[in-house]
Each structure stands twice: as structure tokens, then as C-alpha cells.
View (cartoon, rainbow, N blue to C red):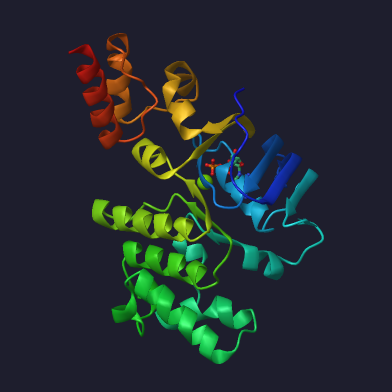
Length: 284
Ligand SMILES: Nc1ncnc2c1ncn2[C@@H]1O[C@H](COP(=O)(O)OP(=O)(O)O)[C@@H](O)[C@H]1O
Ligand SMILES: [Mg+2]
């Protein structure tokens, strides 16, 4: 397994040899050890049932390890209240309807900060800002469950943004969003990351992984089978195939052009164009 040490800041969370079994005996996590550092943009990938959601729920204390430990900001999640962990790790559920329970959009978004016991003006400030970021102002007074899946998704994200956590986990957030909405969600996340928020994105979209993550963690049958910089991940086609991952077209083209001196360590169309220009210039 390839492990490239992270160059990011302080350690926010650590999994120490975590195993987790559901009540029916399903072993969903097996021997997971990893660190998460401030400022990272992590893509968590793997087939259906590989343990991504189970791992994510361990980070905010919704699930506790059967054996091993999860440490968040120095505290063992088994000893810490879920309410305290929610200030550090915000989890956007795979299914927004598992997260929405208030009668209006504004109440839904206000719920988290209000529960933290923040002063009313601060609750309002955060609510307004989160509604604005997710372009929900217009829908403030609507009932969340009467809205479209895309709107419900954006409400669930806004309610996590309003809690201003240090880590935001998005669990397959593109279901129900069109391409434009998905792109603007990733723009929002990129900006939050620029301001210091750690982002963990669970997705099957390899183009998004290539363009919006700096580290890729791959799970298979509850085990971590790969953990490295995104660039390194996409330069190893054999490994990607073993993990059942298909790189985006720009990266596939770079691989086909390796014999001409093109580096496969690119992550975007723009980088491929630059790399081609470099190689062609050098051959003149
Ligand atoms: N509530 C549950 N009870 C029993 N087994 C579950 C439960 N939730 C998930 N699982 C099982 O745990 C494994 C990991 O699931 P999950 O973490 O949801 O994977 P992923 O998010 O990668 O699709 C799968 O085998 C799944 O069927
Ligand atoms: Mg899942």
C-alpha cells in the first residue's frame, strides 16, 4: 500500500486500528488507521458497501468503534458527547431526508447554531450567511420536505455550514443535483477549504476527485487499501484498476501519451494542456 505523509497542518482526527461491526455482525470497518490534518481536501472512495459512510459516521461520533479508537481533536469519541463533536465535524448525510426535520428552511439551518447555545445575533448571522452561500434565501419560509431533492440537499449542506465545523464531510452529495449545481457546490467547498475548513468528500465521480481533492483514500470491504496524494493515485493505472476506479478522460489521455514523454501526474484538463505544450516545445 502506498502512503504519502501529509504536508498539511495540525492533526484534527486519527483512527487507530478501528474495527466496526453492525449489530447483525456485518464487519464494516477492518483495521482502519489514518490521520486527518487541518486544511486537507480528502476524497474517500470505494465501491458500494465498502464502508465509506460507516467511516464518516465515526468521525462525528454517530458510530463508535467496536475495537480501536477514534480521536477527534485529542478526545476519544467514545468519551465525548456527540453535541461537542458536532462543533468540530459536520456530516452531510447521504440521504438529506435523514437530516431534515424542521418545519421551515430557516429553522432547519438555524437549528445547529441555536443548539450550540450561541447568542441570537450570532445564530441569525450564521443562518443568513449559510442560506446565502447555498442560495436558499428565496426558500427561507418553505417546508423542507415539500421541496425538490436538489433543494433538500442544499438545505442539508447549509445547516452544516451554519455550524461552522472545522471538518465538513459530504457523503455522495451530487445525487439530485444537476451538473451546474454540483459545480457550484464544489466551488463553495473549495472556498471554504481556502479559508481553512477540512473537506472530506465521498463520491464516485473521478473527475471531481481529480480536480477537488489533494488526497485520496480508497476503501475496499472495510479496509483501507490506498491512501496517497491525488496526483500519485492517478498516475498508477494498475492500482486504480485494482480498486475499480476509472480515471477521468484527461488523465487517461496523459497515460496514452506517456511514450511521448507526457507525465501522467496531471489532474485537470488545463494541466494536461500545459503538459502537452511543454513536451511539444521541448521536441522542437
Ligand atoms: N445499519 C446497518 N446495519 C447492518 N449493516 C449495515 C448497516 N449500514 C451499513 N451496513 C453494511 O456495512 C457495510 C458498509 O456499509 P456503508 O458504510 O454504508 O458503505 P458505503 O457507504 O461505502 O456504501 C455494507 O456491507 C453494508 O451493507
Ligand atoms: Mg455510503
